Amino acid sequence: MHLLQPVVRTAAVVLCFTAGSSAALAQEWPARPIRVVIPFAAGSVAEAIFRTISPGVEGRLGQRFVVESKPGADGIIGTTEVVRAAPDGYTLLTASTSIIAVKAHMFKDLGFDPLTALEPISMLADAPLLAIVGTNVPAKSLKEMADYVRASPGKFNYGAPSAGSPTHLTGAFFSQQTGNSMVYIPYKGTVPLVQALLANDIQLAFPTLTAVVGQLKAGKLKVLAVMARQRMAELPDVPAAVESGFAQLVSGNWWALVAPRGTSTRIIERLAAEFRTALAEPDVRKRIGDLGQVAVELSRAETSAFFKSESARYKSIVEQGGIKPE
Image (cartoon, rainbow, N blue to C red):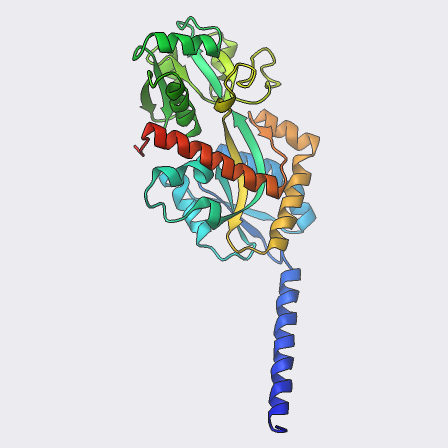
């Protein structure tokens, strides 16, 4: 018994030292720069949003963010890299609507479930979609457009850049709500989509304001509604989807900050608080607005709930429409 006592004491000392060292290491976070993966090409909107918000956070954390663009497979490659990264608080991801709420419902084996493989930190920004039609379309409201579509099945086309994007799924849902009477035409990018609207090759699309602001100002395209709960400051005379009677069509291309599953709750909460503080700054909100986005301030719990509700909504649209990757 006496022979075991020194061993027990030694083990206890080692355990205390190890626990103390781990606690000390945790308390030191962040001890080095934090890597933030943008799963799209350099210069993307996601990168611009993050760089707009991050300077103040860097100052309060005492460390800088190192932004890395990892494009490929419409965001899946960069996201997968973050999912597999060590959950130590030094690898984060700026994720989009499609990554969090859509991809898992379109691919049989995505390799991960965004809702369980990624820890929500903070919403960043949202770009509400617009219901846009060409000047040849007589509709003056979204309700009138729906009436025209129902009355002439197969006559109206809607377009979107890439299957599974919020732009595509919003169009698909509108078509579903009008008797599946519209024809979907895919385009490789926003520029050809806008050109198709101008040429009347398609009659309806749901892009963001940034994509069509020039054509709207020139009177070459018309906006019927903002796919949001309230009107946009930039388009004060355009009704929101909710007041137009299309509450289920509230849609936007939103962005959020997430981390690998298992990242310390203390680190997640610190980041959430710092980004929420940054998003409340008037200058940051203005600069985000200049990017055609709206700053979104939600708590971590609210962000998590939003992810789940958006995922459920898009799952229903994908399944009802039998939508597959192109």
